[in-house]
Length: 210
Image (cartoon, rainbow, N blue to C red; front, side, top):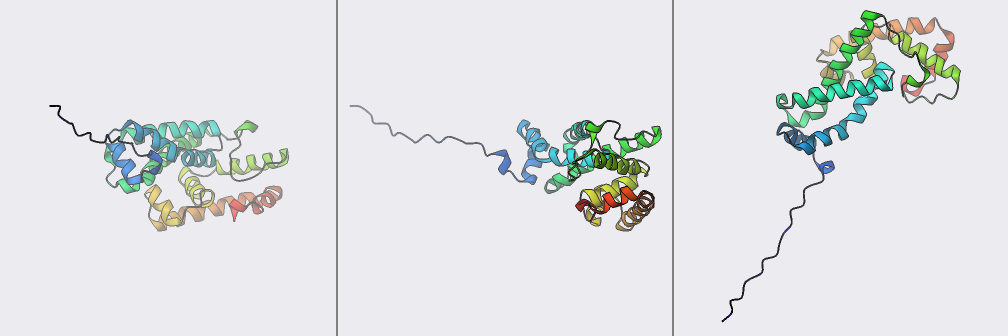
């Protein structure tokens, strides 16, 4: 007599698409050392970090270098993240620390940005002629004159469109300190820009300045 065997359906496990994973779940996978989490963290947050670097430094190449260093620190210190749902803030906190270090280096060696036309940053400005490119260089030369903290606060508030509260959280500063730094940076830039009528007209017409 033959014995009939019950055929059980074979169920295949399909791994979830990392792009559908929440930041909190991604953070937990990153803490656990999952290889896919490293790739997804870079894919999800690197574009924004590089854009921040371009706006703060004025150089595509330096922005990419900054992002590489920042993410190396993120991956090395993932285990220190205590609130997985705050993964984005965790990533940006490292980016801002790297930016602060680079801006201090620039200040120490009095190095000016925009020595080459191809390093112009993407600020949402369509540069249609050499005159506009020159004016943008002059604007960033003024940013280079600011102290690193003043510059970062200005960039995060006006170019990254963060709220004062978000700037304070990212830079670990009180709201009153952010407002004070922002006021000083804006006052200095306003005086410098007003001394250059062509630059003043250029800056006033840009949407990112409003």
